[in-house]
Length: 589
Image 1 (tube, rainbow, N blue to C red):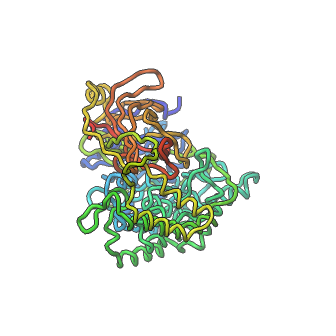
Image 2: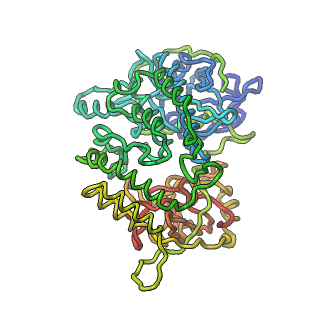
Image 3: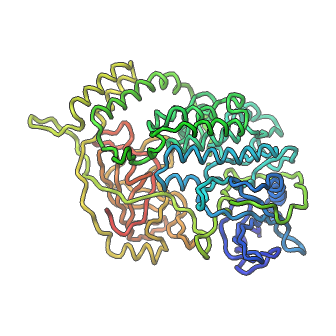
């Protein structure tokens, strides 16, 4: 039996002087435990079965010894060894425990503004500057491997499990090293294309790959989406990564300052030499940005924004419509030149001290096939529980949904009609559209006709009888817990929905106690309500793939209540993005 298939080590197990307290997480290479040392200090201990990745565990320990500094933006490796002493079955890597949350969770759960995003990216850049100076490449920079520490709000780079240092042997078969495809650089994809039939060819990632991946993180924080839409089968659109420029962030999110956008787009350049020469130069650019912020930096990048103490109104009259038109004028010609050609699709995913016990073994050369997208073990390892119990899995965002009456097809009438926008706003939008030609003009004009009519919001509503008890006692969920759901497993395309369209839970939903609450592909049924700009949802029944049915009380969420109505929607054909979230509630607002 593989060691990963065996039950976790029980609390109280003694490993090199540390006592196991709880399981923090598990992944493709091993299990991570929370342990307490003789002096009461808590750490994270990754236990890797020798048959699963002994060489990789020793490499992670060696990398940790290379970059072990008292640095606020790096989580240290404290030591490593074999266990048990006689006939060892595991290699353990002892790591610093960081009290924090994943970067993507932090971004979803806070009203993050430009200043905060730039600060987090700068902090990761500082960490990479130290890492690269030690001739180490992280190779898996992404939100799941960046924690935001609760004590001071700084970003901490974690998980060097797939890292590489100069001169280290190759441990993975295939063209690419382990990593996450959607963060993979254009030069890596180009190498794969040119060497797909070359036996023994293997891409060697460098500094430019880490900087490109950080650019993807930066873009996602600013816009809430990837720089390139996913391909038709839900994989990376390699053709776009290789040949198309990303849509400028300010066209996706007008709240993104142009100076910040310029730094982000330089990180996403196709050639590594066109990016920053290294993390040090990136730090300098970000420091220069921070020296000249303006009031726009204080506006939340996503969700409802407040300016000078006043909330943005739902409709901004002619100004809002003119802003939309200007965006189309600026973007129309750019889009026409960029979004063309064929597609290749690749299927895809604290304070510091010196090491307690430096590693004593060099990593051996070997052949180990890494999982296509291993779970971020060290990210989980670096996050301690809020108190004594083991760490709960980070919940994905959600909030209460607001319902609005269903959209009905508009009909001509001789009587007075409620206008969606003031007449002057419509005139302004039409005038702006005149600056476009061809398909861009048609898209601009048709956009004015695709806004659903405004409807009043329904009153608050109680949960179904017994639903709260079922969720909290039978399923083990807590009020406020959230998880990701999907309308379709095809990314990059809007999905048509009706009032009775269910959502599907994407992946097993585990409660804070780690028990399985609802399995993958559970369908949530209820009712959708179509508002002016959003679809709201109230779900009252969960049906598992095995046929079990539970009464529930959950609402739809995407950064804030509801999920945005996508372009191209019209009465009778409402479109939404393929992914959203739901939240457990005890009543509907």
